[in-house]
Length: 120
Image (tube, rainbow, N blue to C red; front, side, top):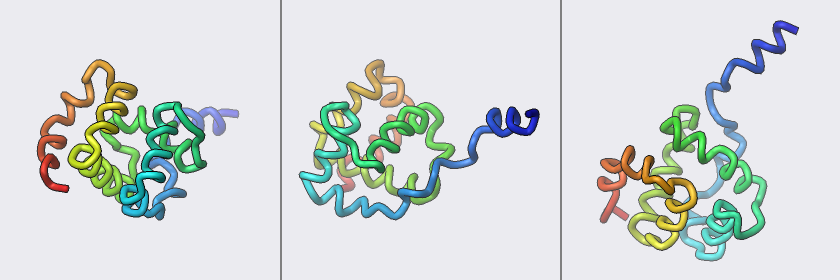
């Protein structure tokens, strides 16, 4: 039983890499696909299995600066933020209202967000 307790108490080093080969560019280039993911994250629509996983891990990733993200997840997140900030600020704002109502993360990541503005 002690072994089980230690296993439960130990945090995983990274999130699952099961979804690391998702084609982020394809999603960002398709209004239909992007809207599906955003609606999932906002609780306005059905979630695909990878959308559900994203919805479950996003709060933790924001709070802990993506320390458990794989390299591909960090790269994909940067690409998504750049796209939303520059090309879909309406969706960026909706997501910010849901996941950062007190502007904690907007303030924490301000330099990173400002750095991607205009660099679509």
